[in-house]
Image 1 (tube, one colour):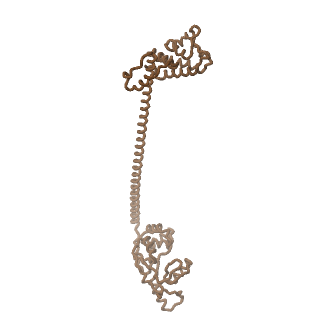
Image 2 (image 1 turned 30 degrees about the vertical axis):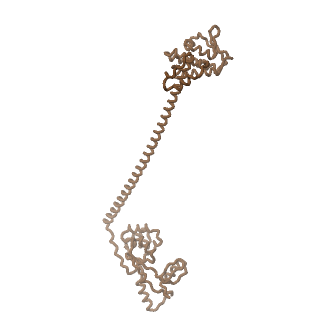
Image 3 (image 1 turned 90 degrees about the horizontal axis):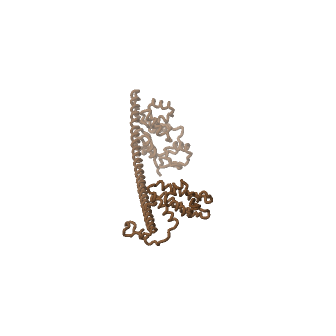
Length: 413
């Protein structure tokens, strides 16, 4: 059976080179399940800084931290049968010599670093092991790079462990410290570089902000265009509706005028107009009216005819005609509101105000008589008895008077 070249922890699977390492591992982790293994402990040595790595993970971590990528595999050189005996304090003369020789080949020591930089880091409060580690892995070049390395690796689990390198490793001599003038120039260069980087970043951010402003501006313009288009469509639809409403109103007025004209011709005993002589736009109305049966004029129609006659007789005095209509509306309104008051139901005919407003105009007194007023006491008064007050007739009279006052086409034909 092949002799074991390492000890493997059965709890975590780590490979250990010697019994001493197994004892240290047991003390640190409380693991006690160890067994011999023919698998050699990996020994990858960095060609740049001579740091040994015992696993591929350790070498990857070392590359990530330092940027060193080249390693020499010395696994086969270090592999030899492992002794399971705990080393004794007293050994033969030959054994120490051999052990001393082995230790000499594998002796690991702390790397040499710039003592001045190390002292400065210690004065800043960094532990010696952390400062040494930072100087070693940052290339032992300057205080700034060492501090940057500490900041970048402050969460590493082995940040405070002293780095070890083989004793026979040749460490490159550190670069000489910079003079104050060189330090000043270096600091100025770093500031200039930082300033340029900041300016470039600000320019980039400004370009991004400008692009965002342009995008937002385009969206606002598009939203405004859509809103204006919708408003334009709404106004067009509103104008169209208004025109249609106006057209319907004109048609309604025209039909009303035609009906009034036909009604007056019927009252005057004139024959209906010949449909061939009427306007082409109203044949349907005239045809409809020509077939209406002849019927007696109602009281409302008689009132309308009185008001129309009054307006036509005073067509050159519009203000006087309008005042007559308003006076009649006042008389009728007073009676309707106060039918029990006799003073509103009795009008003196020779009253100068009445004569100026109503009595002197043809059709005024006739309109009041249609509302129920009668001449009494030798035609001195117009009187409406209480039992002859008809609210329906008064309301109809009020409607006709309102129409005569507000309708500009009233009495035109």
